[in-house]
Image 1 (cartoon, one colour):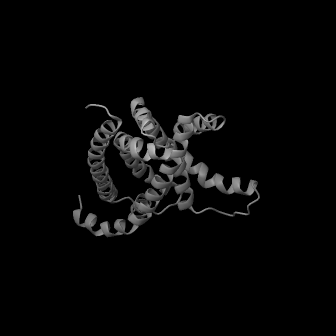
Image 2 (cartoon, helix red, strand yellow):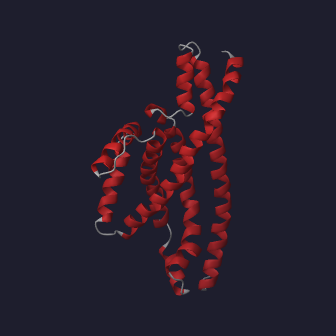
Image 3 (cartoon, helix red, strand yellow):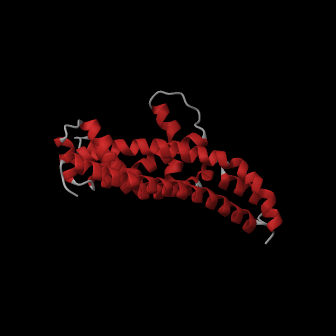
Length: 240
């Protein structure tokens, strides 16, 4: 094991972390917004849209993410040309982000929907008795209580997203894994163990930071949940 070689190539991997973070952050934020829409459609059972979202979730969760990356990278230009857009090519980063948004939107919707359904019916009734409108009920009562329930699942989704992002090198993105492949090929595979072990430590660091962020949010939201539950029952005139 050549530790000096690992230390020497570490700065190269650190230089491409922004590419991985760009893909992860954009995919996580946009995927989360998409998941809210999908979960709302399924909760409200909107005609037609509910059926379409069911198909979307079933298809997305059934197809391996690597295959989806290939479909988006090679398929988006063809699809846009069918719609009349003259597109010669789509960047690998763009295709990767769009694919991960679609994929994680389906995954996270199945975290948000159960979290919403877990809120007791009495909480909705108590909010109605206080005269809250739909937005007030959601922001003041439902959201503070469903967030701690959803956070562990959303945290797992974020970790899975980081793992999934390691596959985007297959369509030509020079991220952490893409660079690892280049370095390994350049050395004719002589020091593959050192290269991929270095990559493992880099991903471990990113995942560890993400886990700590989720744990911090969980601790914070648990306190909010306890305060909200107390205030809600007190305002509604219930004894606790």
